[in-house]
Amino acid sequence: MNTIQTVISQSGDKMVIMPFEVYEQLIDENSDISDALEIRRRIASGEEEEIPDHVVYRLINGPDTKLKVWREYRGFTIRKLAEAAGCSSAYVSEIESGKKSGSVRIMKALALALRIDLDDLV
Image (cartoon, rainbow, N blue to C red):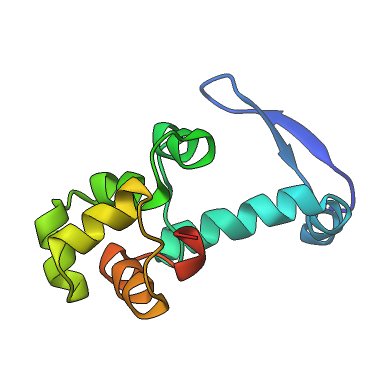
């Protein structure tokens, strides 16, 4: 079969049958599709995670700090996050409120506890 064919499934859905080479060419020509398929593959394999839109909105638009948004999304209390990062809950609270920026060592520890990259906090 060298041509693209349209068929109708038993449920009435229109479907396209094409040679794999044509499909690969379409993917190559439409890198957005290729990128989307790669992201879906990474999510399915556990390499990436899907973040709910309300969390993304809070990360982008504030007013809360990224640390607070991630902490709440991951279900940590300030005390539990501080324990996981090896610092005091007062220090985490000050970072979260924006009163302190946090040392690189602690920010790395917080990111590790939250299962995110350091870049996601700063």
